[in-house]
Image (cartoon, rainbow, N blue to C red):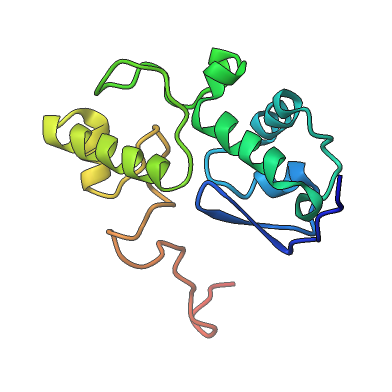
Length: 157
């Protein structure tokens, strides 16, 4: 088998990965791929996690891309998938890169359309998950709220 040359940029699922990094950390640069998911991908594709991404042959890169497109069919457990029971078609999916951003934006638009609590909070650019708003999230309220300093000469002793 001929030795393939080193590639500085490896393209996987429309994302450029650094060829100098180990495949485990390079895969994490893809939006929607966490540490555990990248480790599971390497395990399923039978690729050592410490191997540099630029030294991988094209066959293994295609195997990783196929596992990313259909992780459940490749042997990934269902609980690792990031979009289970999709509201549109009811299927389990794993979304990566631009598909993940598009789906999140559509979910937020749907919440705003049905005017649920979370949708209203998104509309007003307020925190959605119950954080306090007195001191933080002041983009819509104006400047900082602080304590007024007394003038130097007016201080009582």
